[in-house]
Amino acid sequence: MHQLTLAEIARGLADKKFSSEELTKTLLARIAQLDPQLNSFISITEDLALAQAKAADARRANGESGALLGAPIAHKDLFCTQGIRTSCGSKMLDNFKAPYDATVVAKLAAAGAVTLGKTNMDEFAMGSANESSYYGAVKNPWNLEHVPGGSSGGSAAAVAARLLPAATGTDTGGSIRQPAALTNLTGLKPTYGRVSRWGMIAYASSLDQGGPLARTAEDCAILLQGMAGFDPQDSTSIDEPVPDYSAGLNGSLQGLRIGVPKEYFSAGLDPRIAELIHNSVKELEKLGAVVKEISLPNMQHAIPAYYVIAPAEASSNLSRFDGVRFGHRCEDPKNLEDLYKRSRAEGFGPEVQRRIMVGAYALSAGYYDAYYLKAQKIRRLIKNDFMAAFNEVDIILGPTTPNPAWKLGAKNSDPVAAYLEDVYTITANLAGLPGLSMPAGFVDGLPVGVQLLAPYFQEGRLLNVAHQYQLNTDWHTRTPTGF
Image (cartoon, rainbow, N blue to C red):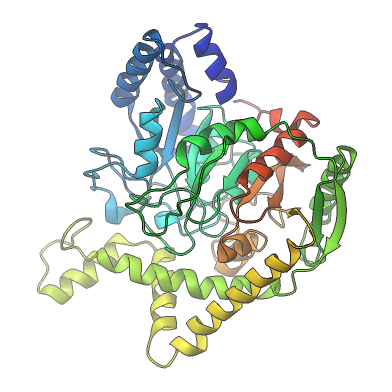
């Protein structure tokens, strides 16, 4: 049963081939057996999962149906879950049990999804490798000596290893798409505001967006359907109708205009990945798509702009973690200043401290105009580049990452080298656009992803293209050895 996709599970439950309780017990046993190799979970919620599975079976027995009713999933450990530890991968929140459910958690629970646990992640979602977690690094199931990508690496590794069919993630600069590419999954970052951020512990509020990680575009469509929609509790949520994503999967690609930015194929891209991207383009051309070269001239400024804006917002968001109201508190503080300093120094890891310091500096008097304001102007130029490009093409295609997964620890002494792995994904967050990564082949036995970007609220178009591609390729069906 562990090889079934979300869509196959929905059909199996509807046809009474197995119950949600049977499936849940099978996957919990598999997690107990295999996750010690991967470290992809922070918390296993066995009692909750079995209770939800029994409830889902009862709802089906009473005539209810639904693609997510009884389907097992897991949540990245920054979605608040009532009464369950929500740690953000940090010592700071190791003892925090959320008093409420995030909107995404509540919506999926209402649809009948079964929560198996909370997945490991880079601390406060800051990282590209899932090595900054207080609970230790996550391993890539394709090669346990390599990273799975970050910050949603726990969700990605768990799904790739067939511990469960799908999981939630969040994407601030590529943290759904990059781990999806490095673990052979399909991952979707929706348009900013499409999925509620209420109850999702913030890293950078103008960039963060929740989304699905699964093996196929069809499964991402099912999970996104349960996650998306307007939320009056979230001031950044956009009141836009949610289409039936599954219904749009089978549209023809005849005449689809695909733009390939020339800036993507620079010296920093592994030539073997470039070849796989070109092969993907040829496959889509066979399906009727028309391909043309385009330009995104301000892409070169994306990483410097992002690493001013995101840390600036992080320094503001993380100021609430001070040892007073919740989270880690140091022992025997001498005074209030000592409480703040030691609680934060003990509670935050090196990467989080680094970004807080960078952000506080960028926002400080005398530097705001020179750094933060300038970065926001670059952000606007990047958005304008995309708007111009989408006047000519329907989607933009390119690599998700410049390299395949690297070895654990290989970039720990050079944070900038790790930051550069997000060079192709960051622009979508700066512009607020939807983006999807799908499997496109392998380099040295490690997966490679191709990225698709679309205009605002065109997630359905991305899922349609990915689904048609997956009907004609088999990369997404490959399973890591031993799992």
